[in-house]
Length: 86
Image (cartoon, rainbow, N blue to C red; front, side, top):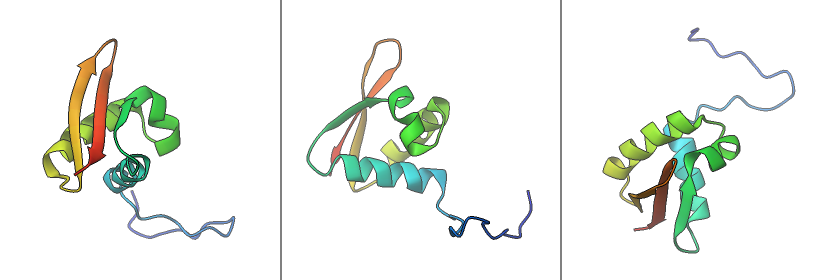
């Protein structure tokens, strides 16, 4: 991976937002009105991450994120996560 940033050819600025920041922002936006329940596979396209990446990041966020309450809520063919503002 190169340390230099290539300018975008379509006029958009390249994003430096990490996968964790992108997921955290998505969850914060979706949970502004209250509880959010989801399975990683259903939000993967919206967030631009694989369900496996989301699952790993959710475990990390549940320990480190102070502005959201994150918990594994249930498991039926895939983990369902519950997120709400702290």
